[in-house]
Length: 164
Image (tube, rainbow, N blue to C red):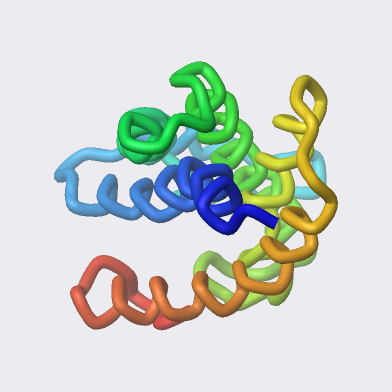
């Protein structure tokens, strides 16, 4: 297993997922669901999923996620974009599921919160490029640990309201 390649692969989804929180610093945010409710009467995604967060996540994941490849090429810029887009879509799917399960915004939902973004990104990426199965397994083991640590750091920095 090439650990450098592994980290180059998971870096764009991690950046995409983690950087969307910076949209919370903007004065105006626009919910992706426009405040609409699903047929079950609950919000589709909730106020935490915004157009601004989506744009920041995809842009940062693509550009910052690709940057290490300038030193050690593994992914193309298009690969970084696909991984970033899939990561934010995976996070949206997780938010949709949480709303259907009546979980409020910010409520911890292990392992959904920790794995939705990275496993979706790897799944989509695997549709057009081979991924060693051990990369997926390692991502599934490491991501909850890394996710918890980075969320706690974001909480201490005042970027998140809850430490999970």
